[in-house]
Image (cartoon, rainbow, N blue to C red; front, side, top):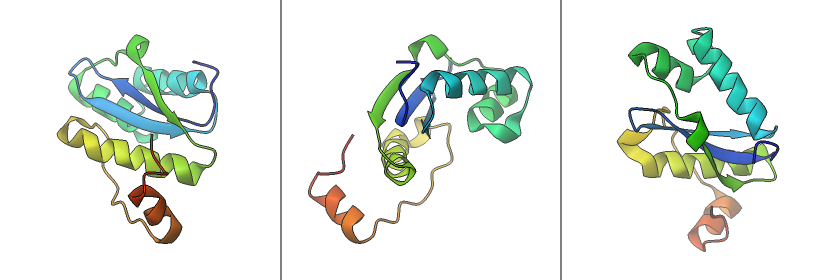
Length: 115
């Protein structure tokens, strides 16, 4: 799991809120970057670090999971936004507005772009 690239992932916090992210690199590398950002109190590089440092929480890194894959950053970001939207108030992330157009909108509508 840690070596898998091009993923949408979720890290749960001890408060039961969740952080959803995407990376084109190995998941384990990105997870370690989150861990280091929290330890350095570097809230500017990660919303997860910002949350943990503000509320003195620690993520449940051992319960992290890969939700989906995506061959391009564009596809991963769309899938990430769909998950964030479903999480609602449980999401640590700030939700971006989902503005689907053209083929992407059509793929989502017919269920071809799913998790």
